[in-house]
Amino acid sequence: MKISLAGKIAGFVIVIIVIIMSLVVGVTLKGEERTATDQMIKRAKDITNALATTSTTAILSNDYITLTQIVEGIGRKGDDIDYVIILNDIGEVMAHTNKSLVSKTLRDDLSLKAQRARITLLQITEEGGYDIAVPILLGKRRIGLVRVGFSSIPLKARIAEIRDHIFLLTIGLLILGIVISLLLAASITRPINRLVQAAQKIGRGDLEARVRITSRDEVGELGEVFNQMGKRLSGSWRSLEEKSTLLTRAKEELDQRVLDLQMLQRLSTKISSNMEKEELLRLIVELFMEVAQVEKGSLMLWHEKKKRLYIAYGIGISEEARKRLRLKRGEGIAGQVFEKKKSMVINDTLRDRRYKPLETEKKLHRTETLLALPLVAKGEGVGVITLSNKVSRQPFIRRDEELLSTLASHAAIAIQNAMLYEQAIHDGLTGLYAHTFFQNYLEQEIRKARRYETSLSLLMLDIDHFKRFNDTYGHPAGDTVLVNIAHLLQQAIRGADIAARYGGEEFALILPETDAKGAYLLAERLRKKVEDFDFLKGKKKKVKITVSIGVAGYRKGMRKEVLIGQADQTLYRAKREGRNRVCLFESK
Image 1 (cartoon, rainbow, N blue to C red):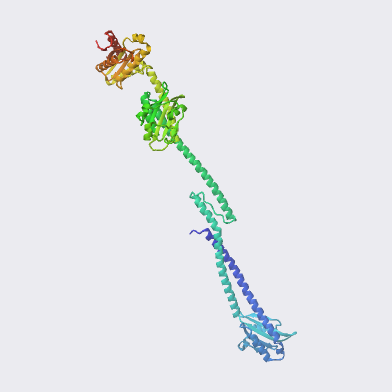
Image 2: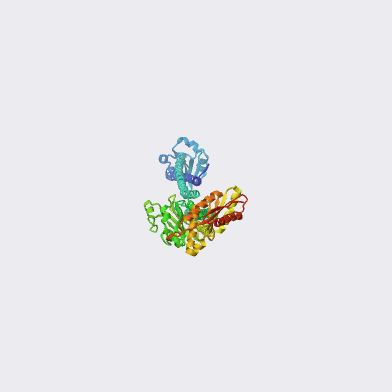
């Protein structure tokens, strides 16, 4: 069974009180009994001595009547007097109060001793009373003897009364002691219980628990120390929580950055692996929109000759914006971002004065939030990526800007590389593929035709009398002819076909999955378009330009050089046969 501290203290105090009270009661009771006995003995002696004194004269005169009166008067003085007897010097009874006790009394030991004694004698009876014998002296002469017997009943009653009083007092004191012990125990344990409760609260995690100080004793000092410890513990815990929060936040940020870096690596690899400009632009916009989770996205490139930003690719962009939106450096949001090479976030386009939408967008309120990112490669501005309206309808946050800015750096380099690659593989004047690209691409198509046993044709095209034209109209006019013929070629071919400037005024067309007959028909349509085209508009007389075309088809096992040689031979055959014609290679 568990006993509380208060119970232990109260029990201990009660035991101490009981022991002390037992000792005190015992000593007090003994003292009171002794005092009552002493008082009784003194009274008995006083009465007996007074009787001896008052009866002296009556004894000398043998005045029995007076002696009888004295004896009776003494007998009436109290209930504790059993008998009174007065004897003369020869032992005769001169007066008494109880005749039945006379003979018995005169034969006891006290009477025998008293006949010879000259002092007061006292004897305790069997019942606890007292018998007193006082000799009556006249000078040195002994003239008589007084015997008085005192009962023990009044003494016992007195002692019993004293015991009752002491018992009641003891009970009262014991109850008072118990109450005091309980109050003392409570006063000691109450602050301790507060300490225990506060400690339990702290143990359960309530570090703000404190002890109410109600005293300045040792327990109060202990409470002060406990409160100080609680404050320090609470402060330390808050510090730990703050550090833990910072560590958790740092870990989350680090984990997020790791994920961002992994994603950036994947996206960068994906972007960098594509060198085709148009495909790359599409891929970049789609990836940015996927990462940012937006509804609209556009990629604007800087046109160096026209000194304008134009939309090279967009998703969710109006056709009007594609056609009309041309921004100078520093004009609009994109122009400012391009000029300052610093990203810009607008999370409320309706209130931000920097945002100036087109008329159609004003009516539809299509753009709500906007993030514009500069595309900068090697310190040079390439363009601007603009992302609008998060799907979640949430504003753009710092992480969006940081992550997408990093991705924009990779995208800018990829775009620049694609543009450089495009410049490398395209003819600067006509925009057609250059000679080197033509050679590589034809090699690839021959391998594909060989592997999959598909058709492949090659057209070689040369402008008739082009030198004479340049001499007559000048080289700028000749350049115009070259550019126009390049446009006609691009309009005539399919997406899988390749048009290239082979050199000077000579062009080449690679037609995958096209047999020689189909290639011949295409060549004839091209020849007719060139013949009908007005190359120098504004001249009074139409300047006629014609072309000669040689067509050759791939046959199994043929090498690239053989196919080019056959097409070239056929081209020169067309020139020999009168120009402005198409010739198909015929094997011997």
